[in-house]
Length: 326
Image (cartoon, rainbow, N blue to C red):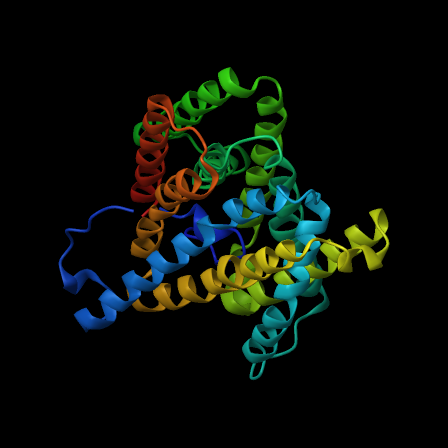
């Protein structure tokens, strides 16, 4: 029913996990240390690039645009690249059954469209660091969903991982709540709903990935999400409004669509091919750390000791979940 680490997507690379590896080279699914080093570099590039998404969105908000406009511009610019990826991945593949087509549409709705929409909405109210920590709860949410729906009993290490992760988020949440007040509650709820929506996608995508492949599913579902985001904009605004945003918003959206969306998808996929999904997920822990650095550098967001401690607890909890699942 589920796959972890998940197939990559516009938002997913930032939700992976990083630690110094002490495993011997022979444990990697490659025979060359150079290939392994390249895979680790690709995973790091993907994690860091994807983590810049929230920073780009925050910078764009300074120009007075709303979440729907930003999301539509991002997906409209990313659509040609995902369409090319869809054509390439399907060049020798059999046609999808009607059942799988329906599943791809549903997964595109929950995993890419709804998750991104809620995330962009939430970023209007909370800091980039808190947003990244909440989204990074994805592995724990997938674990909770599997425990509930599959009626499994959690192990001691799983319970410990969950406690550490959510305690870390609560520490960071409490820090921001003291500074910003009630808007933090709304923003955190929206981003948590985004994380839950994506976790449901991860849980339900396993069988579809096995049938049609991770690259093809990512490309198809992303194209579905692109169309839905533009339709959503068209319901709320005239389409001509897409051409009336301030010039910096278009440049920021182009960076978001290419560097922070399509590039991480390709980098993580190539990394998984070289070093395997487990190590790629661990390297992905660079994501939250790079988000903190960029938020301090580009946004001047405050960073207190409680946020630092919360980040460390979340990273430790997610790493523990990944190790237990492996």
